[in-house]
Length: 330
Image 1 (tube, one colour):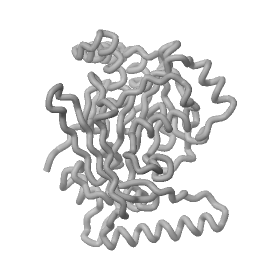
Image 2: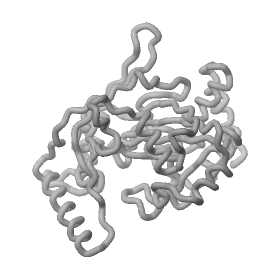
Image 3: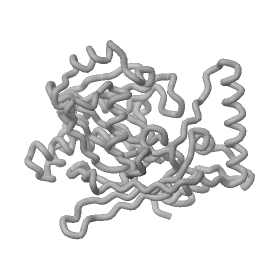
């Protein structure tokens, strides 16, 4: 069994495994291939029974006028392959998806530690006794896009604190600036063209931060990560809002945001490595989602590399800032 290493930052080990990317170079949009094969994800009989329990419960809650989970159509990840181009050795990502829905996601993600008839939990059987990267599709009924957003006019990074009203284990934690799961209705093009992770990232910016299609956005895909605690895959993006500042966004948000309810608050932190890493270090480890620190670190590295005209050794500048932050907090 492969043991997947866990991302470490400011002296802490997280539950995030960086599967691809170190922040020094992006994955070009044309090198991302999303392959979709229609057809529902298949469950073992016992897990299928758990899903039916969830569906019946949510229907009862809805009928009673109580808070309930909306069963939107989404996708299960059947495979992820990272390769390189033949000449320049640029990264290439190929994702394979089939059909799933939110109740499918709940059946596994909310029951990772539920003991099955074989005496094992899903976590033990598929994530600990076997390589979690190779877990079967029914274990991965959601794929998320996470974006680290920097304002261009005043160079501040946006950190979002998830609301207590969102479903799942990451409520009331610091998270990426914006995030969205790939959804059937929103992200599967009606003309039959392939899905685009970059388009999902742009949708996340609009729905959670009110960044419009006419705003100038410098958007780069930096890599992929796996939340080893909750078994959720994520694409890591960096976005720079060239013409917007903190004041611009807060003024816009005051007038309404599509999914304003998903976050309790936003913190704008100076985008320098010392300031951002200091903020991460000063908040308790338990206050962070598993993959948010890794995402922001990759964004810092990418900014440093671009500031030094593409020199990948600039990642060492971020490491130096991390050491300085740790020394100052001893």
